[in-house]
Image (cartoon, rainbow, N blue to C red; front, side, top):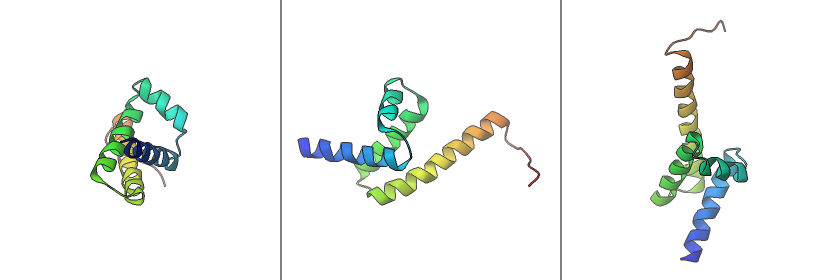
Amino acid sequence: MKDQSSTRNQYLTDIIIALGLEVDTFWEALLRKEQYAIVVYLWIDKLYAKGSSMREAKCLLFKARNIYYHKKTRQQYGTTFKTNL
């Protein structure tokens, strides 16, 4: 049981670091029930439960994070915005 818990914790930690987050800061945010930390934690936990490899989990999380930020930006600025690029 301890080995499984240790493996899970290492999986969580490795992915948190790969996402460019500080581990201690992430856990503090999770304890404060910050929405982003909760969402990331749930994503990582589901991927671990499904047996996803680290590489697969990182790729999926990068995609999911981009979608999350895109939706958040759309909500903040409206559904359409124009740029002069």
